[in-house]
Image (cartoon, rainbow, N blue to C red; front, side, top):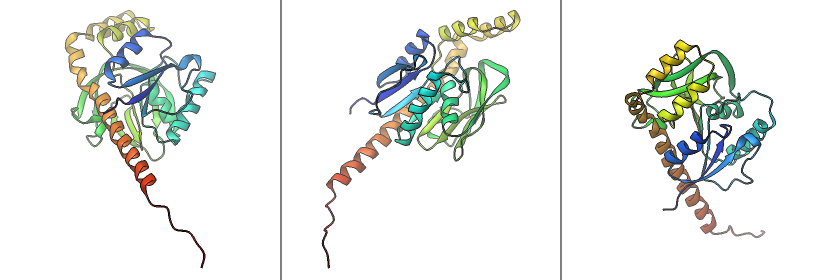
Length: 246
């Protein structure tokens, strides 16, 4: 079985942790694009696509963000499956007609999240699970026709519309990434020390269950890819209709 071809739109402003994390978690043939300099794929010959987190906001009027939105919009129209993480989750919701707003608070650290138990993206994950979070924007209105998959007291943490999935939390984070991120944030000394104290090997191991979203997404991509290829082959094999006139 061939390796899946996955486009990774990296919006993390050249954070090396992001590249390392997604290469570790995605068992596929990855083509990575630095979205923040306006680089997007020049075509759509991919089995699926992933959009990463970012320190930007999806509603900022920046040229690179508009370029990403335009490519994502066309790729969705071509039925390419998507998985968005944090900022990517918000961007996918925005492209599909949802709303993203500043929450007025900042959720950061290991959080408890609940999923509905009805989505294959969360297969094998307890309905209440732990994951690392870092965001002050949130999807406040889901795209029309989508379904909520996960949430906590802060915001929606997962949705699906057709072949598009988004999760607000960071299943890809390891402890190094979490510590590096927290040190970059403008936090009070007390809150900084409190969050750093939570970034332990024990909490990381608890959060590893959430990494199943990557495996589940890739399995979904394999299924739809096989289905699409089978349908295409059948259409080529179908006999042409006879033509003529009375």
